Image (cartoon, rainbow, N blue to C red; front, top):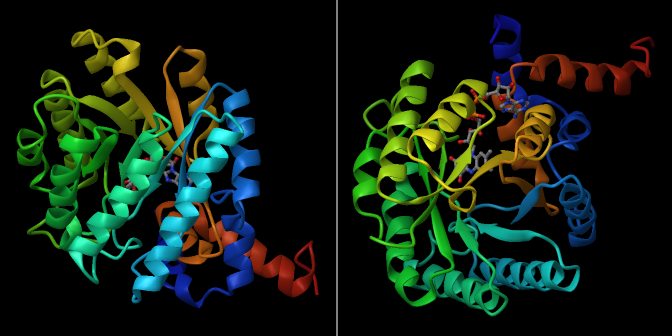
Length: 306
Ligand SMILES: Cc1cc2nc3c(=O)[nH]c(=O)nc-3n(C[C@H](O)[C@H](O)[C@H](O)COP(=O)(O)OP(=O)(O)OC[C@H]3O[C@@H](n4cnc5c(N)ncnc54)[C@H](O)[C@@H]3O)c2cc1C
């Protein structure tokens, strides 16, 4: 990332919300469930599956967590009603993890039980390191009875190779991603190549253990390494999928689908789009250009003139 981009990324919280909104619209399906349904219908038409994320993070009140559960129940009903090829992804802190672990566990159970009634899978997203143990504990507690649950492991975490050992012996379904939160060096590998190296090592271990692998990356190097590992371990098509975020690397997505791989797109929607978008913008090295263009267009008119 160039110096200028890095400077803009550092000052993103100061960027006007409308400018973030203009650029962010590619990463978010919209504010409503209906908009998410339309996006998923289009993705399904292109041969991609989807997972719905109701936007929002860490709640401070139980009522907010319960609202999130209700929204997930509506999302599950919509997937069924519209016969979409989709499932849901949930964030523990949105479902009350920081308030009370037992309460969060009950909320995850409610969502997973509603999905299970329709043979639908539920993914528990992984957040920052302060939530890792509790998230894995909720998964361990609920998985044996429900079965339709999976977790996420982050390749940048030093603990992740060991976490693979603790997965259930059969039926484990894990999304592997690099990891998005800013973690201290004691907890996380830091170098770009180092994280790639660990991603490959963890994926290799997962495949050797027979874990269903949801390979979540837009990094062509890792896609290439994953394809080689899948071939080496003779993993059948039904035992893995690639995953990408809405609005990122559409071309690579199409190439993988055309190549016969199953691929799922993460489709976030909801009123709480701002913090999600800021995280996505931080990752994108071209962020500076887009945000600045949106700001200048708004301030000076479409051509950047006053
Ligand atoms: C389906 C899915 C689910 C995820 N779930 C979690 C989770 O539960 N917990 C968690 O911590 N993280 C999660 N992540 C985020 C993940 O950890 C990474 O931060 C993110 O995917 C970027 O890593 P990358 O492997 O694509 O590699 P990068 O090296 O970051 O990106 C590779 C290339 O992809 C493109 N690219 C990447 N991001 C963007 C962007 N925002 N805009 C435009 N282009 C971009 C660029 O061309 C870049 O060079 C998820 C990612 C995906 C795809």
